[in-house]
Image (cartoon, rainbow, N blue to C red; front, side, top):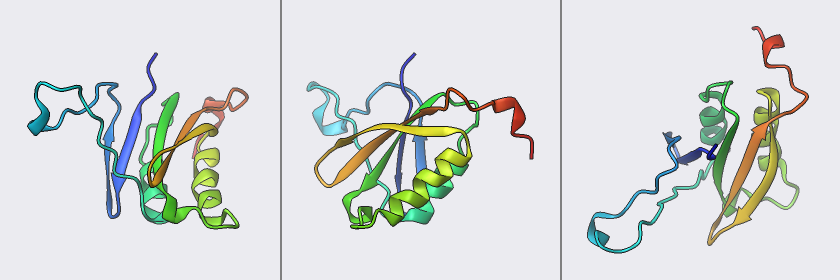
Length: 116
């Protein structure tokens, strides 16, 4: 089972749950490159997480380094939203200017008990 991707930009989100990278048009014969547009504001990242199907087992969230405040308040808001929906952070990769956070469904979280 491959991990899905969640790429976005301020004011909206582009969700791609396929594992295939996107190749730029100018590089047709070269290796495919995945283009990531990290979230630059908390509200857009939260909206994207809230729009995800609750049955999703794994996803990635790209977050700009500009959201990495020294107290961690902005990432706490994003992570709290994921936790409330049944996903927990499992790791992150530091990239140039952003981090890619990996989330997975909580093992002890009962997806049947979440009726709202």
